[in-house]
Length: 379
Image 1 (spheres, rainbow, N blue to C red):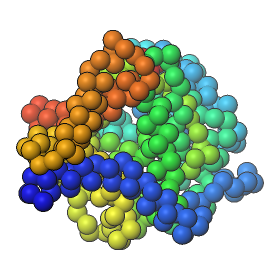
Image 2: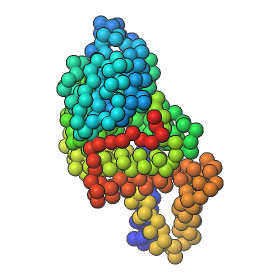
Image 3: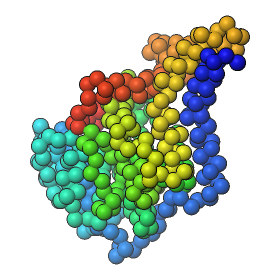
Image 4: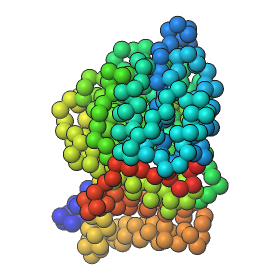
């Protein structure tokens, strides 16, 4: 076998492992370990529940902030054990006024500094032993906060994230399919060791485990692995559920993920993710498999395509593999003209994979701002 052929098959193998092999191997590990990872939901008496500061960082959210405050106030959790803080990150509209009118306990009107710094300021002001975080455009299920608090009965747990159910806005986005796959992976990781990534819609930490991170590095990715490095468990609880409206189009989802990846690459390359210090072998395997290889997939695809072209003279199998690769690209290109489900899935996969590389380009060439804007179509 030639060097070109080896490069091709190694690239293809790594892509397949990242998307298929790792979930299968993780499922096997979870089955071998039983159910000993995630702390499951429990029924706690009111005098056993912790005081929780629920923090909502908001920028230009005047249309949804009152509904978010009302949703938190309606949770099945003792109201005297919830401190609701809305941290307005230099909002140019009436977000702060409407949050106060809706009944937030504390409304911080901060200069524009980005979501992370708004959350930091809210944590400084918070009274709760647990700080929980939510976006302004989501809705928590009535029992979500109780479920989110359950794992903290284990003193080893420093971080817990819930599960977000994406609501289809009757658009062409295929994010729901990918998100169900990602949630299944997160549940398995939590059972095996700790999650490698969270989400901004519903998560919590102990006050003592909360981390101050670079303002361009979001909590979703930077918190779990840093918690593990510091000796904490970072768990996922599927029963703690929130609902969020998804971006209506695949193109809109590409733009959203491109912005996310411009914040992700700094975490990967200079935020400590690549350093093995603090990882046990199991968690290191999960970081490499789920995070590092996943972020490398656009480059692995490009290498596979080039190597495939160079190997065309080495047998019929390379003509078949090239036809498959070109077929996926053509399906993605034609999906807007022929919007069938398989074509749309191909377009989603190609664009979302490309967004990983586009985010790296944006960060390297333009830098990444700490500020953020509400994603179009999600309010």
